Image (cartoon, rainbow over all chains, first blue to last red; front, side):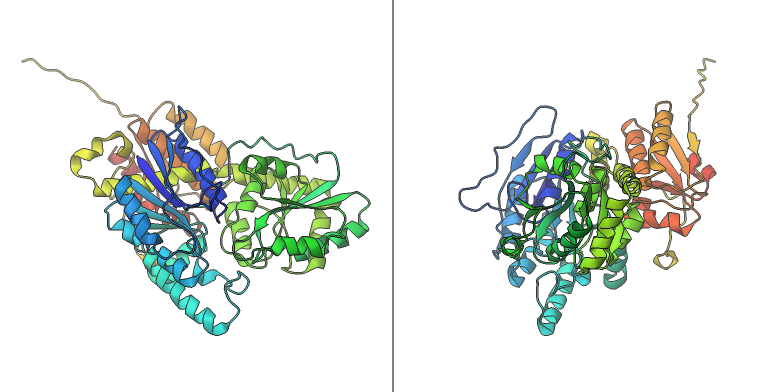
Amino acid sequence: MRIALVTTFPPGGGSLNEYAFHVVRSLRQKPEVSEVLLLVDELPAGQSYPPDDETPGLAPLRYRPCWRFETLGNALRIRRMVRQLQPDALLFNIQFASFGRGKLAGALGLAAPLLAKTLGLPVVVLLHNLMDTVDLKSAGFTGNPLVERVIRAAGTLATRLLLRADLVAVTMPKYVELLEGRYGATNAILAPHGAFDEGVLPPTFELPPGPLRILTFGKFGTYKKVDTLIEAFQLLAKRSADPLELVIAGTDSPNTPGYLASVQERYNHVAGLRFTGYVPEEAVAPLFHEAAMVVIPYTSTTGSSGVLHQAGRSGRAVVLPRLGDLADLIAEEGYSGVFFEPENAWSLAEAMAKLIDDPTYRQELAQRNYAAARGLPMSDVVDWYLLHFQTLLHQRAPAPAIAQPDVALAKPQVALTKPQSAQSRK
Amino acid sequence: MELTVYEEIVRIAIVSPKSRLDAFAAPELRERLETLLAGTNRLVIDLSAVPFIDSAGMAVLVSAMKRARQAGGDVRLVWPTDDAARRILYLTKFDRVFVMADTVEAATKEF
């Protein structure tokens, strides 16, 4: 199967680039995948993607830059590229602002799955957030109620456009239920985030030597803010006998350029504070391994959390805000953590102190998170996508094509059971 | 009269877990299913007594199905009776991908 993926991808710094990196690594290892075509965004002048990768034993990886953040013609350009490449299946790895933070560019780009589907190939959209659940103010879109209503209406329209794909995969159970309940969707599926499983050493659960490191990781500035975390860290440092270090790893969100620089300037008097800047993929796992705990300092959420999954895979305890999506994720996927009240430095300091003061509890949470992450590695999640693609291809294929090896997994379902009505579901 | 008679015996393993299929139970189930799949490529997994399945549990079932189908067989599921266990099948739409049956007898019949 030749799979095309519309996404951002390292060295591009766009949102979801790391997730794409791990999806692609898994995809290339699957025997049923013969080629991975990356339909990526064009990089700024002076940057470029590496050459196509034809490492033996892996599906070849080819880069085809064909869209640009904040421009209006992305949907048409992507369709043209898909028509030229003629992949067997097309996967979009996107969220609502993938194609632009400008409302028009962002919305027009989201028509790309619908346009691509007119070419006749199976199209699956992995949608990392839903406009219906995003706190637009916290997420940096708008604070104006009137503008918010307009954005919400556009979001509803964009969601309907996206639901014209063959399948829309979301990472949270409640998102599937929302799409079914509010939009009447019958093609929304749950495809959990999955834990990044490549190149990660088994964790030791022991603390490394040196100061006790508290790690936060992400693209900061909108709903991922570090101000409260730094305040909490200062409170913690005052009462702690042991040296502490707060590592703020990552970059500004594309929506808030300059945020981290301003934070760094404001808090340059705080001892033990370290800003890493951009962390290349190969350095991410060691960074997590060096941490005693991982803090997720969000003020709202827009879906599942890659940081939580990475912390789990690295066997680290997490401290996270008591927010709907994250609390659901903990309950649904078996992760554990210490909760704090969002934007409350005292509450956050107290939560972190729990893990510092009780190493046994910290290790217990770390082991539980590791077990949860191991339960659903990225490799398994990629299998889910392949299985859905094979089913879609089977539905499209003329009878003789069933014998093709790469669709052999997609057996038609035999009706051995009574169909369940939507109303019977709970 | 020249007559050739042969007997074809189809080996089907029937697995009936009785407890939660979650991230903590998943590794053991995965291991057990892999052992079974080394001996047959046809499995019926009777989920009727399973009270809860999460994504990790679902992933084990999917992996088993993938492996069985690659070997020319299949994995068929008997519907869980508990709504908390049925939910993941609806959410993932794998009830449209697996061959689902109401009873073990129905699941084995078409193999």
